[in-house]
Length: 301
Figure 1 (cartoon, one colour):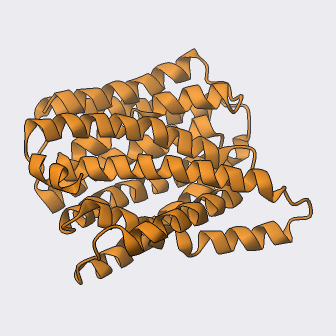
Figure 2 (tube, rainbow, N blue to C red):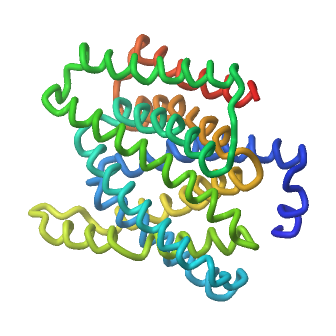
């Protein structure tokens, strides 16, 4: 698999594969966010997911993929720090606002920063049509934020802080997207980067926080359903994060990052069907603008 991926880099086949991977990541990332925002405390859900994918990835990192080159260890350290701050920001965001409110802002703000990061790090330049797509995307984001500030009737007192945290989380999304793209391109074997990334990202901080938080709860949730959620979330994470990381190795980072944000459409459906959250036609139209902008960016290059 590694030899085939390396052999198609820079070809039209790589571009098509990256497109498919980015769309897969969009759907799975929306599902991943719903798993963390579901009926369990978001901190507990994240801790269960993290320890699950770390334990699954560890034997692959140790015994299956090639050992990382020496220059990769500082890159893993940087990725760990960025993802740690991202997960803190995301957990706080999900505790302050409804999923269908904060998720579009998180996933829509991220690509704007990622476009500039891709320009600074990789020299990627957008066409005028792609910048039009970015403008459409941003109109949906800020239109959604204004709509929620005016009309949302639930958790009104927490809405400004929830939206501010969502923008901050979007900033960390762009940081990890750009940095992870740099990391997976710096590794001779992309699966080596992915395996060790999941080990380092999952084994420290959040499982420990979740354990302490669970122990201090007066009404502790059963560990069985929480562990099952962690296992399902870990599988989703492998394919979601793995897909977008591989897409950024095969194609432009900015385009892959923007296309992934079509996840807001999937998030709206998941929030409505699985979480029972009301979306409404006007908010759905604004969410659709974000997705349309992402599509224009992808096909305007």
